[in-house]
Image (cartoon, rainbow, N blue to C red):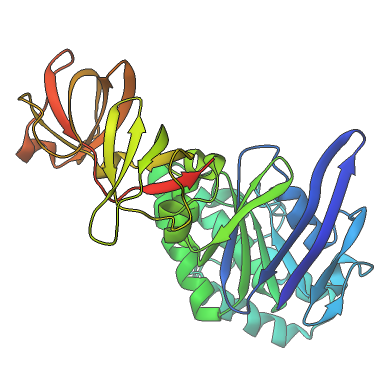
Length: 356
């Protein structure tokens, strides 16, 4: 439905976007994810017509919309600070765009009531904006963006001003509304967990380029670069060299700074003596009482840090002078290891091999 083709944008000497191309499918929620300054908001503004690209094209339903003004594009943006009119009521804010487009008064009232019900603000149409909570204001901004039934909804970090618990609730509400209306949505955030929990697909950006596009599970489990692996979730990255390729029934042997690891091959075209990264997620590593390291990929280690989080404990352990991060679930049942305690850890055989 939406196609971005070879988009470039510079601000002086700063190259914000460098040859960015992507496609957005009708009805999906796709998230532009990346650190501050990676170009994700600039790309969103290029789609919405608030920033003009230096080169490249934006297609919507097969037509180039580069030269169309924001109000003629069929897109609507919901900003980070909501940009609500403080002197208007909830209904006044939602219906403002409809008044500008000269809708009849009765039709505006019907549409506003419909949207109030959609965002679960029934009966609050007459309430002043400053009498609403942060979550309610966010829903008003969403309803206002949806009022004119845009083809594409653009969300620029709309949940960043909410506290942690409310932010989680609003993710679910936003996703529910998006699916119910079936509106094509582009979401911008630097929060990796938020992006993975809400999106159909992710566009991971870094330094003005697209690093990888894919489903959240694909991005997390099979990152295409060291940057993607380290940015999306916690990760342990081990430097390795292929010692033995193994076979269909036997694992490959990778020589790492921890020692030799037996690894099930995720890349078919690796070669002996080739340098690789092993991507090891913290939740996949087992930690247990100290003992002789006799199992496959088992190592003796020492607990350096321990951060209790209720349902999980995040440990950092020292293995062969390298820090390894481990997530241990259900600590009340499994038991808690103290800082300085000797433990054994086991690296799984099923890890992602990333070619250097």
